[in-house]
Image (spheres, helix red, strand yellow):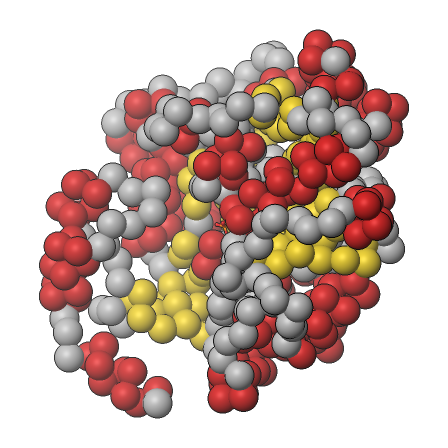
Length: 478
Ligand SMILES: *Cc1c(COP(=O)(O)O)cnc(C)c1O
C-alpha cells in the first residue's frame, strides 16, 4: 500500500503537481492568483512530528497540521481502527432511531474525559458545524424555556469559530465579515482579552515580572467587564450565550490573564447567560488539561470540539452538551430539527476512540502538564531576550512571540513590511512550520514532541529570528 502511494507520488514532479494544483484547486483562505503564480508546496508524507515535501525536504511541523495532529503522524493504532471500521461498516447514519457501536462508545468515552457536567454529545463533521449546532441549540434551549427573545450570542473580536455562515459570524475576524454580509443577525462582539495590545500601554522600560502580573490581572477584570457592559446594553433578557476560546488560537495564541475566565463565569452566572467554550484547539490535551476550561477554572454549559478529537486523521467535530441544557432538550424538547449526514460517522468515531485511548495510554495530557509544557515555556521565555521579541506567551503546548520594532514601548513595525510573513518565509525555507498572525509568530506542536525535539525546534526558531533581524538591519527598518 505504502509502496504504491510512494510510487504514485514519484511519477509526478513538483512542477507537475503545482501546475495541476494551480489549474484546478481553489485552496481555503488563499489569494488564488498569487498562489498560482508562486506554486504551492506539496506535502507528501508525515511521520511523528515531521513532514516531507515533494522535493524530499524534511520539515518540523510545529503547527500539528492545523492544530490537530496531537498524537503525531503515522500512528498505526488510528490507521488500523479506520481500516477495521471501514471493513466492518463504513457508514451508517443516526437519523432514524439507529446508531452504530463506535458512535455510542465515543459518546460514552467523551462523557468520561469531559468535566462532570457533560454527559451528552451531539456530533458534527467539523468545528464550524459544531458551532452552527451551538447557535441552533442555545436558541432552542431558550425557546423551550419560554424565552424566545433570549437569542443574542456575544462573542469577541479576533475570535475564530470557523468558516460557515454561523461560525464566521461568531468569529471576530473583520476580513471574514467583510465578505458575504456577515455577521448574521443576533451575534455581537466585544473586545478580546489581549493584554499586550490593549492592556499593556507604552512603557519607558520593560516591566518587572511582578508589575507585569499585576497589570495583566487588572486588565483581565477590565476585559471581563466588557462582557457585563454588553449584556447590560442589550438587556440580559435578550442574551442567550457568550462564546469564547479558552486561549484564542488563530487570533494569535492569545493567553488571557488568569483573572479573566473566573470573572466571565461570575458574570454569566449573574445574568443566567449560557457559557460556551470553543475547545476546538484547546481540547484533548493542548493546554496540559483535557479541556482548556479546566486549565482556566470555568464551567461551560456547552463545549465545541473538533481537530484533536481524531488528531485530524479523519474529520469529526461536535458539541458536549451540559446537563443544564441536555435536561431541557430531552425532557421538554420533542424533535430537534437539526443534524448532519455525518453526525456520528462510524469511521470517524472509531478513529476518535483509538486516538483518545492512545492519549490516555501514553499519558500525553499529564506529559504536557508536568513535563513538555513547562519545558517549552522555559525555552520560549528565553527567546524574549531576542532583540525582535516584545512578548512571549505559552500555555501547554502552544506558544506565541510578538515581533516588535522597539522592545520597551512594544511599538510594532510598519504593518506594510509584513515582518511576520518574512519570518515565516525563513522558517519554511529552514525546515520549520511556524505560523504568522500579523507580527505574532505562533506554534502548537504535536503533543508527542520530546524535550530533544523542543530543543531542535527552538534552535530553528532562534535561527529564523536571526535571519529576520539581519533582513531588518540590511534594509534599515530598525
Ligand atoms: C479550527 C477552529 C474551528 C473550525 O473548525 P473547522 O473544523 O475548520 O470547521 C472552530 N473553532 C476554533 C477555535 C478553531 O480553531
